Length: 82
Image (tube, rainbow, N blue to C red; front, side, top):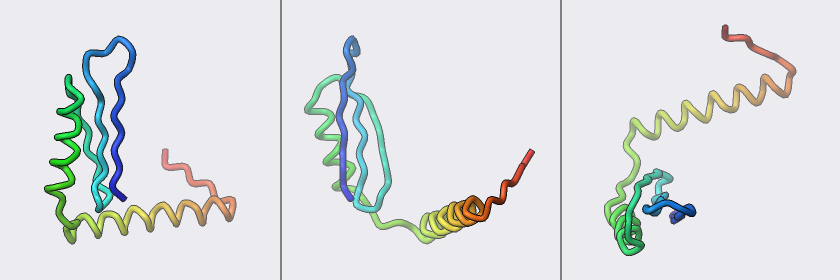
């Protein structure tokens, strides 16, 4: 699941770095030099830790809510939370 993306948009002085670790956590930062981008990526990957119980519970709850919304859509149920 590890992934990274480095971009430098025309006219910018900094690179934009997005990193995903083995557990799906995403981190982003900005650097002037390309080697700093790679150092950041390796630092994120070298210091990754398993998800905590709290993170796993929040992820399960989020997935459950998303599934409920999909079930409602499939059954043409429209909720108005206003």
